[in-house]
Length: 66
Image 1 (tube, rainbow, N blue to C red):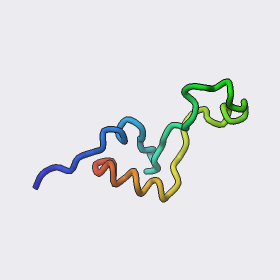
Image 2 (cartoon, rainbow, N blue to C red):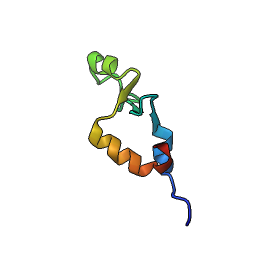
Image 3 (tube, rainbow, N blue to C red):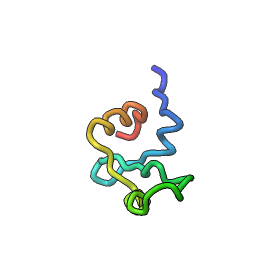
Image 4 (spheres, rainbow, N blue to C red):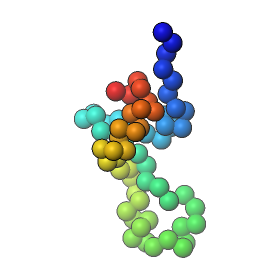
C-alpha cells in the first residue's frame, strides 16, 4: 500500500505540542500593519492553539503528525 501524503502547506504552518494540541501562527500580521489597531497587533504575537474543529481538519492534512 502506498504512503499517505502530507499537504506541503500544512507542514509549514502547523506543529504539535507535547500534549498533542495543534499550534499555529496568528493571521493578519505580515503587511499593512499601519491600518490595523495596536490591540490587534498585540494579540497577534506568538502562536495560538487551534480549536477542536480546526484540529480535526489539520490532522487530515498531516496523517503522520498523530
